Length: 220
Ligand code: 1PX
Image 1: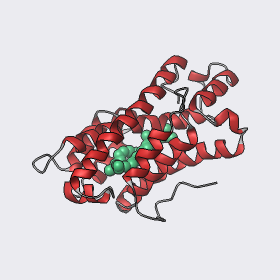
Image 2: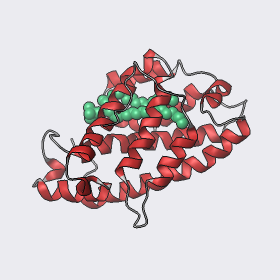
Image 3: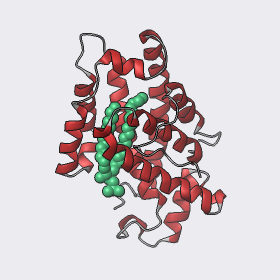
Image 4: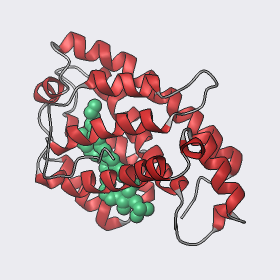
């Protein structure tokens, strides 16, 4: 099993191109979300956050845990049931009566996917702000906090919001941040963000529709 990297280890440099390829490639001809490709995108994002320092390790560990749970389902269960988000949701909803209100989260890929799905909204908002920014804009730390406040924060308790706010303050300047995306000169980074954001939005919208359809947007 290809584990998501823990906060301690880091193999190779982050590449925005790999995120773009993964999120672009994770929607199949039927418009279904391929879980293996989706997780590849998240593994690359975890690689980026691991490069930001120990203050972000509580975030990367949580993301890696969820990625590894889903990867484990893909690797161990009958693969066809977990090849796509649609197949996984169909299976889990049919298997558990009153799934959307079932207490706990034993063996539910849908609840862990939901956490990543919510984080994808943060990523979309943040990358769009970054893409639209210039040297006179607010620092990435501020853009990140704004995106978080408009998305993930509503799902997190005070302590997590507080720890996140402290971590955001340590983010580097815009120039350094863009350089770390590993996509060349600023103009090229911004152009690649212009392709990455719509690819992320497409996957987000498909997943959101599915969760609305099954009424599982509040899985505990
Ligand atoms: C192109 C590069 C851009 C930067 C990429 C950075 C990737 C960040 C990955 C963040 C993944 C966060 C997953 C959070 C999932 C979650 O909401 N978990 C909570 C609930 O889980 P539970 O199992 O209990 O229901 C959990 O409580 C969260 C714990 C950790 C805190 C999460 C804070 C998320 C902040 C997101 C912003 C990351 C800042 C990165 C700076 C660039």
